[in-house]
Length: 323
Image 1 (tube, rainbow, N blue to C red):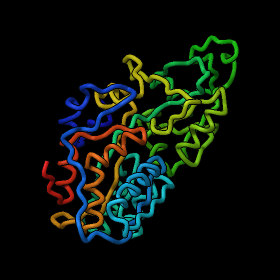
Image 2: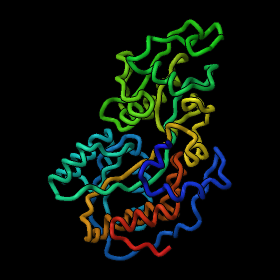
Image 3: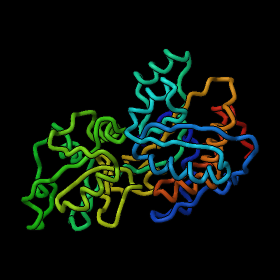
Image 4: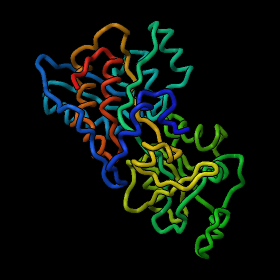
C-alpha cells in the first residue's frame, strides 16, 4: 500500500491529480484560490521541527511577510522529533514533520491538552535513494535497501548489487543518512528497513542537504533524502517494491502509489476542536493551501496537494474554504 493512502485525506483524490504530470514539472491544482490578504494580522509565530521542511517553511514565511510585513515568523529545523515537545511546551505554533507523529507523541500531547494534535498534509515528497552521478547503478529493490542499510545485511560492495563496472564492483558502498531526530530517518527505517536497525557504518548527517553534499563528493556513496534536496551531482535510483517494477522518484510515482517511498510533509498544530484559529496562524495556513502557497511547494522541489485535500484540511482547523 502506498504510504500516502494510509488513512489520509488524499485517498479520494490522488487519482485525479496525475493527469498531465511530468517528472520535471508539476502543475498546481487550478481549483486552489489565489491568496487574498486581510486586515488585522500581526504578531510572531515560531516553527520548530523538520530539517527537510526547513527551506519550505522559510519560503512560505518570506512570501507570507510580503502581505503582512508586521509579522515575524521564526523557523527552526533540527529534526521532526523536536516538533511534538515544542508544541506541547508552547514553544512553537507550527510543528513541521516529514513523518507522522508516533502514538507516544500524540498521547503526550493529548495528556497535556485533552485532545489530539491536528496534522496538516501540506506537500507530497518522494524520499529518494541517491548515488553519485557517475555511479552505474540505476535501480534498487526495497529488499536490497534493507540489506544495504540495515543490520540484517552484511557490509556490501557495489558488485553485490549487480554492478559489473570494474571501477565499482569491488568497492564498499559508503552509506550516508540522517540522525535519529530526523523524520526522514524514522520514515526510512520503518518503510525501507522494515523497522530493522541501521548499520553502525551509516554516516549520520545533520540535514537533508548534507546527505546529498556528502554523496556528491563520494563516488562510492549511497544515501537517502527528500527529492527536493537533489543536485546535479547526484542521481535518484528507481526503487522497486517486492515483486514490482522499478519506479522513478517522481510526481507520477508518488501520486499513483507506485513509488514505494512516497510520503506527506506535514505541519502539526494545536487546534482545539470547535475553536477557531487565531488570525495569524489561520491566515498562514490559508496561505499554504492557496495557489501561491502550493507554487512554493513546487519551487522547492516537492509536489503540491489537491484542492479537495486543501479544503478538507482547512475544515479540520475550523476554516471554511470557499472553493
